[in-house]
Image (cartoon, rainbow, N blue to C red; front, side):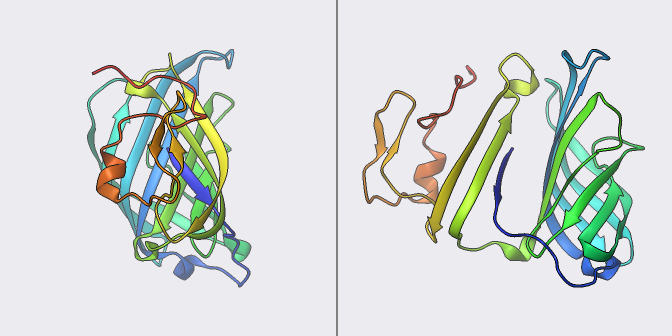
Length: 208
């Protein structure tokens, strides 16, 4: 899961009508044993949420549970938006749990803070109409569970300044080899075909 945050606070008075339409969402969830040190379950979900502006939403996406193959993630839930953008909604990945979130101008971000001491998750949703060029400074974070397991959990956190292009060189792989030279702006097809980790990422690519 990768996140990029700019300013997302919502100053005006908010209500359920403030959250409507289709949103892309991504959620990562893990559960530990009672000691809090051993991860016993990992789940991730992605797709779209359709909010009706009246406190109900539907889910259309996919989920990964542990090392199982991707499966359909569908269903419905409820939500409530209060003043200041404080939002609660049904957890797409854990029935009976609630995600406590904050609604901003460009994103809905939250986690299941009241699900108990062994549940850890992060939820992010952005309007499907918000896609476009990135401009300005962003903090970017990622969290990965390769192959749905816990043996090689890895994360990154870094700052970038976007100028409207997806990436621009110089970009290096883990060994320091130049992937894209200085000044080169690769296409999305070139980026998707680059099957390496960039400099600063700790870990190894899963073996096929």
